[in-house]
Image 1 (tube, rainbow, N blue to C red):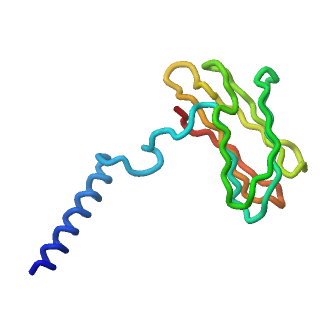
Image 2: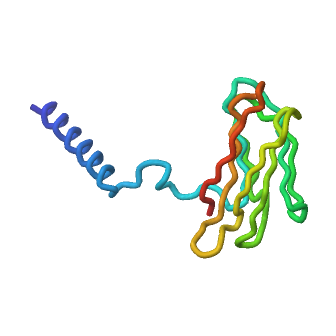
Image 3: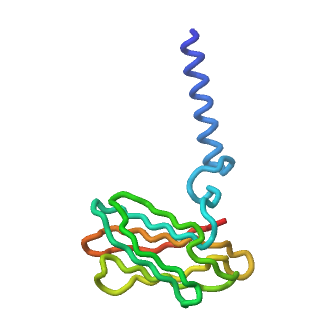
Length: 142
């Protein structure tokens, strides 16, 4: 009898949590998470199974931000406040993977844009170290 009550209680709790998540009452999923890093942060993630050399530079030159590093396989590295800019300033980051091919450029707003646009974090995801394949994305910063 106790076992039946116990299982019934677990079922009720799981049902409530599932309903709350579907109705938007519970903050579930990455879109509802609070920002993890301050604006201007650079995150470099290597999802490949081989280490890769990465160089990143910011332009215009007034930002004076650059790095040269090796990112291990499956490793994510973070440079908090890699670029500091004024609100509304657009910064271009150029990533060079394995010193081959053209740099992969990306524009973002480290301090946010005009109005309600939040500060942004730049994320470079290396997908294939051998082919120097990578993508840039911007996420909300704090």
